[in-house]
Image 1 (cartoon, rainbow, N blue to C red):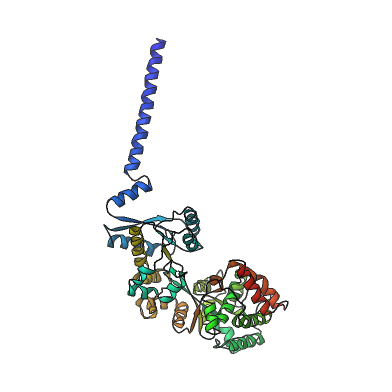
Image 2: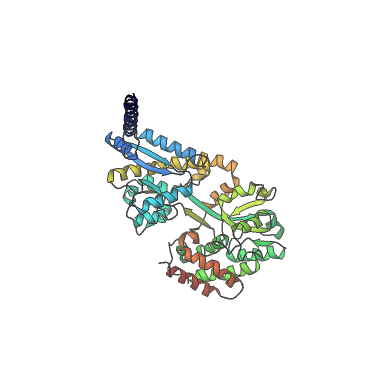
Length: 449
């Protein structure tokens, strides 16, 4: 009896094992059949004649650009149905996007399209995955005009166009209209007039301008960069040059001389060593008359947690003296596909995503400034102007700029910016002169080559 029970027990046990193995096998087959791996999905798409474009994006969820991003992907897939299909990989944040792309770059496994931000362009160029897009752009003169020569030049590295911008940044300076009126000044047309305005503001008991030498010297370097970029053609060329070999030029030293005066006489007592938060707060609380910054700061003027009550009504925006303005372009989108068919498909999507219509869609939904040069004549701008008069004013002024240029942050090695943060206090206190600071910047650049 005991042996019979044991035999029955063993039979039941083997039945359970057999069922478990069978179930596992069926699940594995099901996963493969349903595209359980990226590879099987890819093969299915390619075998059907549709070229799939791998496109990771962080513009998802509650991100400001999520809605237009989804619309453009859906519209592209509908337009090219049966030929191309964008397969989007949604990543939860900007930082997670950069982190993952850096890992993929290290193994030369970048997807078909990436954004070249935060050093990703340089990594893709270094590993040989970055595709020169010059021929694609040059083959369509209308599209080339939509992107614009300046944006193309900005993204050209060693004669090759590795990325396509989709937007630009404008950076002038904001000023407090009430404080300007009290001192009897208006936005300066020349740098001599700007310095004279600072003197008048100071004499009226008003701290002229918010400056900083901590962190990346953002506000201070904007003012310095504007001085260099509007000095003359040579200064303007320097402020458009990626990684200048030398900063020991008349335009730089003359501008540093002015900065010495501003840092020692016309800014807050805590400017030497302070960071952006402190610097911005002085302006937002009506304690300083001017602050260099970009259009994105307009949101802070209506934020009751950041600005004094009614501050938005006190603020206006201006170009820098000599009609100058920082006009920077996003690095934008790159093609990293390994074969020609996917490269062609990837560029078609980039072209679709950076078209005139797409630029205006983002502008309408997010306020992102498009590349097109007739923005002020569009219906989208008319509506935008009603809701964002301050930024609209900057856009209109930008159309009249004589000089445009990049920020020092954008053209210089980080070592140069670090050197400036260390040198500014010494310059302000008279421990070094302008020529010595320019020399320090050049030496910092040479060590980063």
